[in-house]
Every structure is written in structure tokens, then in C-alpha cells.
Image (tube, rainbow, N blue to C red; front, side, top):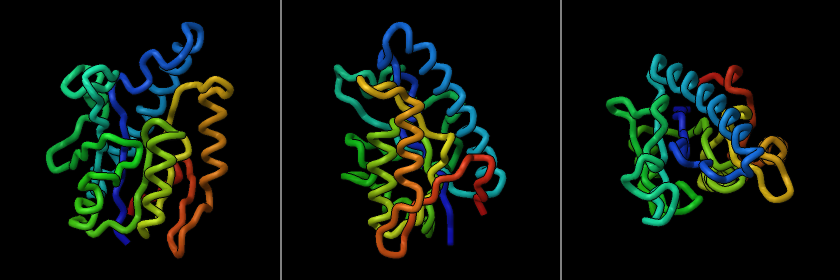
Length: 186
């Protein structure tokens, strides 16, 4: 089994303006903490020669993640190193109309360790799709983030997805949800 660390949409403006004026500072702080945990996991992956793949959402010109803007750029804490793959996507599914599966196959990856943004969209869709394609997945329980919805806080959305996705399977492939500190990359 070959693992890869897959970090989805950890871009400068991913959660910009997604909260109320009162909630945005809390969202920003939680995002910074999540990115710090992903950065530490990425450093462990580098040290252990585990492939790292970053997914970057390419938004339209009027989107907060418009291609080429500061908001579109990957967070500086997660800047791709030489040899790390960046996959560009335009939908919530990181596999849809991208070369992600090809890039993973080139590296003989069978197990994905996944973190990033936004929990209920790109994280949920990608991990479910990965399992349906036969990849085992470890979702980093404290390594994915989103903004509040109209009825739920970001913490409730993250907790719901951690609970819902843990033990989700398709055939022999399964999603396990684990804190970043407990994840074995090799």
C-alpha cells in the first residue's frame, strides 16, 4: 500500500467573506490552526518521502478563487515543493475532469490521507469519490475546515462529517477518520 497526502483547496481566499462580521474572525482563526496542522503533516510526509498532492480550485473571474489572483494562490504554509503535484479543478470533485487519478497511478498510490477545505463540498465529495474508485482514505479529523452555513457552525459541520464519513465504504475501500497526530504515513 502506497499512501499520498492530498491537500484540497487550502487557498488564500477559500473562506474569505464566508462568515458574518462577528463570526469571520473565528473562522479565520480555525482555518489558520487547520492549515498549521496540515503543514506539519506535509512536513512529515516530505521527511518520509510520501507523495504530496495539492488540489487548487480554479474559479471564474468573479469568484474569490479567480485564477491568477492572490486569493487563488495556495497558502504560503503549504507552498508546493519541487516534485509535489498540483492538480487544478473546477468542481467539488477533485477527480472530475482532472488528472488526479493519473497522477496517483503514476505514484502507485492506493491510500489517500486527505485534508483541506471546504468540508461539506470538496472534502466530502472527493473522499466519497476516492473510495468509490477503490482508494482507501484517511480523513484528517482536525485537518479539514469550512465556514458556517445558515444553520450550522463550521465546528458542527466538521464534526458531522467526521462522524458520518468514519467507516464509510464502497466495496473493499473505506474511509477512516483520525486526528493528524495519530496518522501513520508509511
